[in-house]
Length: 192
Image (tube, rainbow, N blue to C red; front, side):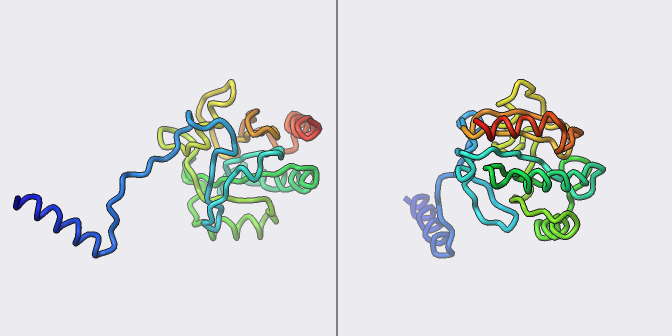
C-alpha cells in the first residue's frame, strides 16, 4: 500500500511540475517508409516540413558541408535549381558534420554562409547524420532504395528522386552537379 502511495505521489508531483508521463515516441524506421512523401524534416530555421510537398517534382537531395574541398558544388547546385525549378525540379540541401567535422556551424551560420557566398535559394534543412547506425531514416531509405547500398561516402553525395517519390538514382560526391549524367537524369525525369 505504501509503495503504491509513493508511486502515485511521485507521478502527481511530476505532473504538477509539467512533466508528462507518455510512452516513448518511436522514430519512423526506413523500412516503414516507401516514398519521399513519408518523411517530414526540419528546415534550416527549425520548422517541420512534410516532404510530401515535393512528390510530383524531380528532387535532388544532397548532403552538404561548408568547409570541404567540394563546397564549391553549391554553385553548380544553385545553377541546376535556377535552370530547372520552373519545370518542377528542386534541390534539397542537408548539412552534415559526419565527414571530418566539415560542417561545424549552427544552422544560422550555415544558412548565412550558403546565401552570402553562393547565393543559395533552394531549400536547406537542419543538420542530419547521413551514415552509420544513427543515420536519419530519410538517408537510410535513400541508401537502401538504390543498387549501391553502401553508406554515403562523403559530403555532396547526391540522390535524385523521380516525380513518383519512389525511384531513386544515386550519384557520388565527386560527380559535379553539372555532369552530363546528372543533367540527363534530371531532364529525363522532368519529361516523364
